Image (cartoon, rainbow, N blue to C red; front, side, top):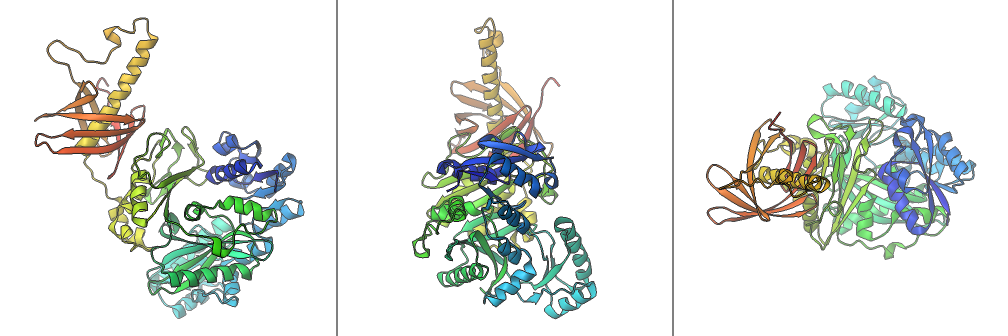
Length: 598
């Protein structure tokens, strides 16, 4: 086994790899750009080396800089993570030429699978079904238009190189083809330096289902079951789950066999993923093969109990696969949501800024999610960190595992209601909307679900619910009390009434007044009187006594109305200066606390 490896990546995947290396006693070398000098992965690694300026093209994509860092620090192997150089055949080849082990497949396998048109030819020869279409060398607009007429509409235009949804367009009618082709080519040229495209028949009711495969250097190849990645925005995954609720055992077995055949066709070693598109007629077709560890690999780890990074390391070190196919078991159900710094209201554009406050279940407070389930947070950022213009705006991956899909959905709903970020826009509310959508709960979603339901998924209650305003105001008051107590202890007269917020008056206490304004501009004044460990909310008709139990940022609120009906809710409140984020089971509200003296 290796004594030291270099991780040619950043963010959450670098942190993820470091965790396994620590457990295995392997020292790690982090590389970083100037923008990442204080990043979490740099702090966690045993050693670190700056490899260039902030832009990826001047740091993380510089093969020579990465190899120089590996040689300087005596790394025996390089783990590429995902993205950046992870599917760069030239990088894999130069690692080998430098006497450094590339923790991944051979350069030849990467090249074979790197171009979608070439990959489809390889798969056809291996007997793996591929989507009908055109994948030839002739690329003139006139010729491609004629080929599109033969295929029929709707169809897909796809960039031959790259991935991540770039250079992909759905064309539904003939008149849209020229503009879609030009747009796809421009995007592909900018992203991958190559504007070659292929055309594919559009599969009706498409579901994106992929199989995790592993091969070793001894000719063994197995699969670790599937992940359903159908929920996507802009052709990029945001929610993944396993097992796929769409597959029965017969179809699962056929697809698994096809995935293994695909890997064997290129003599694959290491971790890889074979992606299929499955129509509503239950026919499946090969899409592409990712020759690296996937972002969503924790889903597979949760249902199998295996550490895929450990498997990568062992296979790269020359060991055989740790298990045979019959020994790999699929247990329970796992769901992953990707939390991005982006604004769904503006077409999911990235949101840049400082992460002023971060909260995730089990990290900042006690989790009330089902204790029979497991919750996992994979993140490469920390509170006070920056979301930069230079890199992917992924904040964290929230993953849950439970005995059943129904239980896993409920656990994820609870976990999202206990997750919050202040400082940047996020897709957390959007993810909550999907998790609560009846079509998702009924497993009726495909890759078109988000686009088809975007308007309803973005709908939010424009009026702040009364109890959310109460809870937020109580959280403000608790912060005020804590700040007052700190100041009193630091003063010369800690018992002075001038250092107290108890609002005592002769006759009757003066209520505290907390003024809030939501994002829609609606202003609310909440009047509160503290009574022992409870808070009385004063309104026009009655005083409602709210009992509060606080666990860090999480408040458990309960109260009775005059009709003696009892209510209880959980509310996560994050506070940074005058900004407050209130998160609950039905959504989230951003407030500004108003200064009554301003």
